[in-house]
Image (tube, rainbow, N blue to C red; front, side):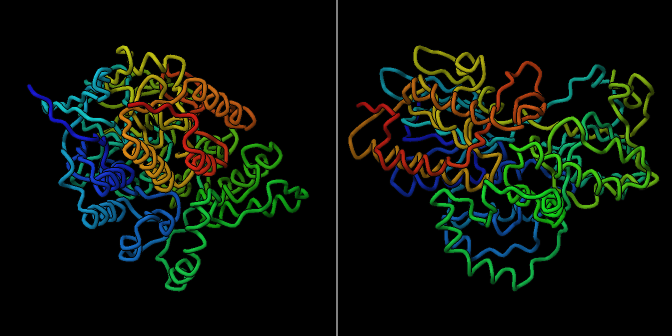
Length: 527
């Protein structure tokens, strides 16, 4: 079958993918978008579990680059729910008019580099064959759920739900006995809603997580007005690579009393923003210990049963070395008579049975199982596609020791391939919508340079890539992050190389700005 030629294939219709497709189309490129879902929204299309919300304030969780979208949308709550965020994504798609660019309910199965033509040959599961000058993987950092792999999965008589692939129709928990397996963000957000309906909930916990209170509420008019007043300064700050929020100096040296008082901001409803407002939280053990002690004291105050409270207190990793969760009523849900915590450190899950879940200690009979096991983060959506670069080398082979990438966007030996918020970028440690914007705008600059100079091929210098990978590793080694068996480290996926996936430095956007200003010294262009 003949291949249809386009300028660019953009994979993904989340916020980054929509922006990338729109930006290229606006510059006159022929763009073909590919999206596995039936519509736009990315992770917010799939993660429809009860209680799903963003974990940074809604006013910050929006496009900064499009004034009409920004001023025509009004968030209702401090932390927006999944339906509202999905509605926002649809609002963006309507204004940008990008849906006609996409093939929905379609997956890219293979993308092979054509050395002679300087093009990517892209195949989909719908039998479409494309030839593209550029391939942009805007597939998202958290888009491939970790699948349950326990013996006996197929034997269970009731429904099994995965939080990252939640049904679109309402799920009725009334009168049901429900197993919730996992205590990451999706379990922490959904448990209070499930427990409010179910007859009995068993929460299977291997590792407790630190969760901060959302203190969610409608957004007052005065808060909106204050945000609008500071918007120009905020926008200029993030464009320049600054934090955009007021921070204490990095060399802050508090007394023990000052430190104990300051870490109380973790309970002020600021969510992940509050963790950023504690200097050196992930670098200084004394500061981190104070934050851990404070959160554990709050858990003990909220949970009536002291034995359950202790089991819910994280002790095996420093706070924020796993992504902190943001919740509404998670801890007090364990005070309900119909909620039982199952501590898997006392007896691991051995199998799924027709009637429920068997651990080393007991069998728990349930009507439904909710698997909240997290994601194959940052690399999963890339390695499951058959991507082959120069000389037919598979991406999986290039990443056998861990994902080697330059700036989280390019891979040596894979010309004209760009990833948005990939490994080696700070995406999952910051506002991911802004992180996507930064990468999309960089890709725009590269592509426009090529067009202006009649170039058909760009690749990153391997030495520059190696230097960036070493820098990402060095920055992580200077922190507390390696102490946690987290998805940041790839530790949640058996066989995945244990390396720090995101970049923990605070200078990433400044580096991107400098690279563009210096005419991309690490990239190699040719015609």
